[in-house]
Each structure stands twice: as structure tokens, then as C-alpha cells.
Length: 89
Image (cartoon, rainbow, N blue to C red; front, side, top):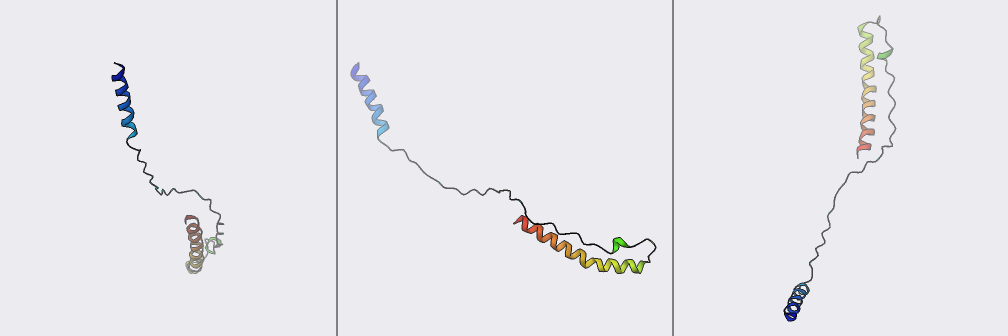
């Protein structure tokens, strides 16, 4: 009886010692977005001439001021987009 237990114990230990464990190391790159504070100053809103007009002024004066303010508004939008794009990238 002692021999049978000894043989079974020996066989079980021999079975564990025959192979080395296989260790596979896989390196994976995971891109995680990180919040970065935006340090760009917001451009100042332009002082538009159309806001200074009165109700009594005719349509021609109003049209001239709107056309003149168009370039200012386009420049302001360009500055805003540049500030936004610098914060996104």
C-alpha cells in the first residue's frame, strides 16, 4: 500500500516537472486621450458700426455699415477658428 501511494505521488510530481510554463509577453500600444487645458486667449469682439446706427438712418447708411462690418466679422471668425484649432490639436 505504501508503494502505491509512493508511486502515485512520484508520477504526479514527474508530470509537473516535464514542461516549463510558456510565457508570452505581448506589448500593446493603447492611445488614451488626455485632457490638456487650452491656454489661448479669446480674441476681443470687434466694435461693429451697425450696432451704433439709429432707427432714423436710411437703408443706404445701414447697408454701407453692414458691408464695412463684414470684413471685421470675417477677421474675428478667423481668429476664433485659429484659437479653437490650436486648442484641439
